[in-house]
Length: 154
Image 1: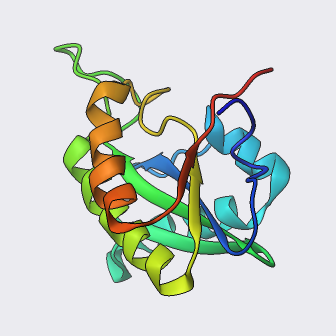
Image 2 (image 1 turned 180 degrees about the horizontal axis):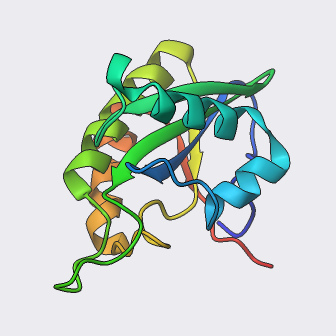
């Protein structure tokens, strides 16, 4: 759907899911739109990364942050580093996204929530939607979780 994933449409609890890197970087891509809308997801991610020796921060992990009354943001660690490797390999890690989406699906079912996202892993992470979409379908839609994927027009 055309629109802005930071302005999720619909009733009830909404989870805005997006992909973060595993090096603590928050400063480009979709996260900038998140930070303009809500300060909490960035602050929580930075603390999560800073204190990573004492928590679950790492590829495949997900952090749920209350953004406002009915909106939660799922910071999903699905990107290794922030640049393509010497072999040209993109930072995206599909297995990590798959694992994180499983946790998002569990939380959505627990809360009776819908999930909203841009084409996760396909911007700066360098992934292909043809690889990510089946993960979204299996981990969310096939389990009965309503999902909206937004293509930003702007």
